[in-house]
Image 1: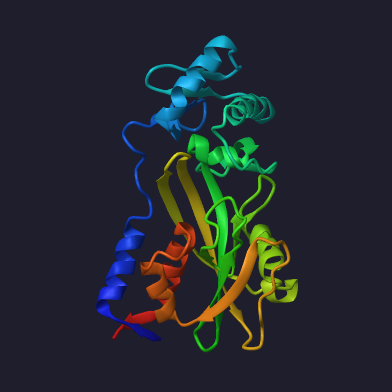
Image 2: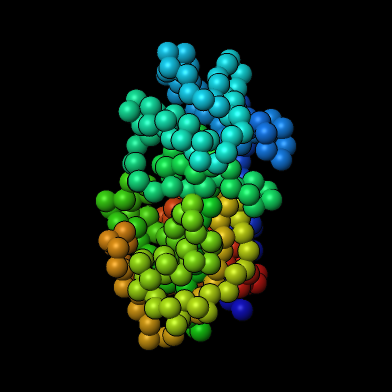
Length: 279
């Protein structure tokens, strides 16, 4: 068990306690009618985006979607039909410049019972504040060091920042397990015979406003993976510029120095707290 100062542990604990923040009061709530809870809030819209959306829907309505002064309403339809309506809405927002970094990949919106109600371009999830899902894998050695990746400087989100060994959004047709193993190979060159050993250790709900973008609401599925001392990660998809192997104390210092992506900071802090004690 590693040791950290009491003040460092307290700082990491406080950060994790604030992982899920409320949407700003001026954000427009997005209500979903017809799910397991009538009128539940499933997203939040930046007030800067509202006038464009109001004008667009007034000129050309979209089935199952309505907007007024205090909410954007989405009404239940079959998943393909609802997905089609939301795709039209997202395309308008994209054409208007409100959804940058279009990925041509779909995420799914899943309720608390595990049912998928619609799928949508992943870049639109932050714009609308819909809850998405991602996996993050802590790669560690028997000596207790962590392997961290540094995101490519060409990434649209958090370029150049430190990240976990591997991490990625869970696609509409993926499970967390499938996604984690895929990301381990693509981002860190971890072969299946090793990635099969991932251990599920928990989940973190992360929510925060993104200036000029929207609201990031994501469930982070966390895995730990012990790596052999002679294993060196190798990136295959161009999304990682390199890797570093560091101690938990150095990782904690880099978290507090704001060198990580927000998501990876929470996941790494959680790993550190599970594997340290006060000095």
